[in-house]
Image 1 (cartoon, rainbow, N blue to C red):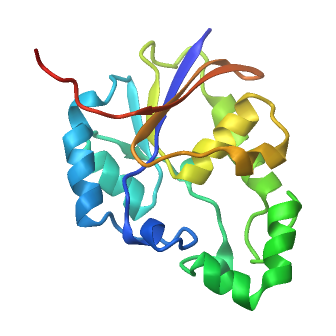
Image 2 (image 1 turned 120 degrees about the vertical axis):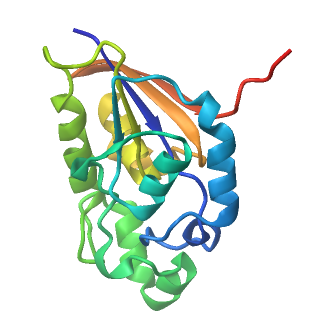
Length: 196
């Protein structure tokens, strides 16, 4: 059975604007306004989910989704780097940052390695389907790292490809297929349809 999975990256917040590692910060005013404006462009799905971060839940709410929080969609656990600015980590721990960026098994921050993240998110993706899967698919608001991990796993890309995938706020990434064989449609902006 073919399964449809649609992922929406959350709207902007201050942590993104400041290039901070995923801290659990709410949407800022601009991010909330953009999500509200995009609500009419959200596709229909049988099951709506949200990652547990405040940013994902706030985006789902602003988009008008009655989304169930899905713990499996938790963002990347960056442990002691969470909430810190990338520049600050680069200045304080340059060797550790270089190791993290170059080795998919490295976790100098004390949290998940890239390999662990992709494995965890890939397990969630592959668990979807079966007789209980909705015909209209799954729609989830998920952190950017989760979206990137889904694409890497779904297409069986080398883990290093994770760093080459750009996911803008409020974009839709769709997958269709089943465990072991996924097709991907990347990064369609959520924009409200125009009349006329």
